[in-house]
Amino acid sequence: MATESTLRFGAQTDEMTSLLRIVNMVRTGEAMTRPEIGRVTGLGRGVVTQRVDHAIELGYLEDGEFGPSSGGRAPRTLRFRGERGIIAVCALGALHIHVGIAALDGDILDQTHREWDIARGPAETLDAAMGMIDELLSRGPKAPVWGVAVGIPGPVDFETGRPVAPPIMPGWNGFDLRRRFEQHYEAPVWVDNDVNLLALGERARRRDENPDLIYCKVGSGIGAGLLSHGRIHRGANGAAGDIGHVRVRESDAPCRCGKVGCLEAVAGGWALVRDAEAAIAGGATGSLAQASHDGQGPRPETIARAAENGDALAIGLIQRSARDVGEAIAALVNMFNPGVIVIGGAVAAAGELFLAEVRQRVYELSLPLATRDLSIVQSVDDVREPLRGGADLVREQLFDLTFPRWFAEGRPSIAATHAVAPALSA
Ligand SMILES: [Zn+2]
Image (tube, rainbow, N blue to C red; front, side, top):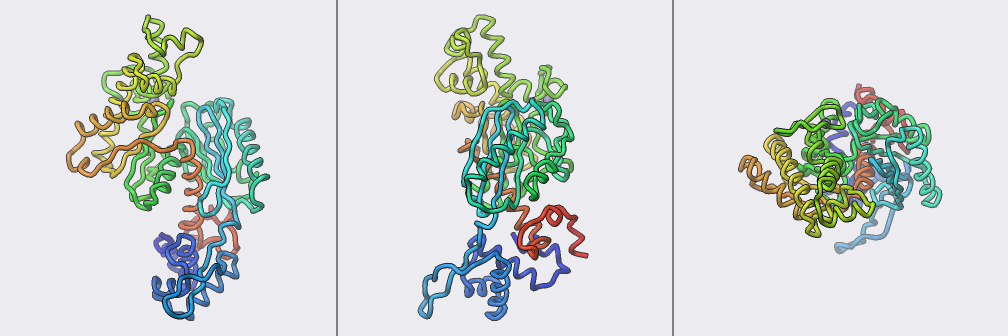
């Protein structure tokens, strides 16, 4: 991965290119000793020694244990000094804040969450989120923050880090989230849609660098993150994958976005809650209705659970949602040809009941070639994955994309990471 990005800075010296490549090889485990580095890169022994010494001097690598011997003297392994920096991740949901801190190797070191209504607006929400991160930092390892990832449940202009007309986030439109975090942490910040973080988390979990994957979250709202050969496909403005607002046939249900007939308005968690309440008011019976009469109105996760437990009303709602979601995904499958579709979110937590319907619709409506090797699976851990995905987003931005711009400073700076790329290649 490093070679591709460093090559873009072709005018830089070969020396820098090979130095960054070596740091990244050790960082990712591609090569761990000087002889291995020599074999993989084809560089001579003297050059490898020189580059490694330079990387050690800059603080990126250090000598570790002695590796296995292949006859002669055992070579020393090298290790990437991942403890020198911390990655902070803030995953904002419609009704919760989830934050974590990670080491530079992507391991989540600590995390915490709380319930929170994102409609309280950016000032109050970000104060709360940063307070939670600060708490984790104060009890965690003493290292500077090298990068921050922020996920929000709405469309984001990735270049500027600003939300764009997010339907469920009143007061957030155009808010400069990046600057707010940058000022507080004095580190580079990337803001992305929460489903993109989920897709990146899935990539990290699979240890597959290049999947063609769609992560579809069916929670209160509906969205999808697209990985094209391992890279997030954000589209021209960051709106790619926003399938919650594609039009569903024969529906004129009003949507939160102001239009009518959106997928979300018939199949999203909030729509299921609306329909469950209407059915209960109309005399529907069962466990969902009983809970409602006892003062616990339906929520997306309680509908999913009731469906799993055989409640007829809930099963009907979940299956209808899955059919509509399956139809929208089928269109994506024909166009995008993913190898894997991961379905997550509170509604999809109904499990096989939901998944079976989605599969059936997708196979019915997609081209045979597009579904020949397609697998459709349930997400593993919606709660932890955005943290992992956020840490991976920062790692990718730091080490695969912007490394040449800041490596000489020894740690990433806001100015270097967000500088325009051609400044270095000129
Ligand atoms: Zn809509």
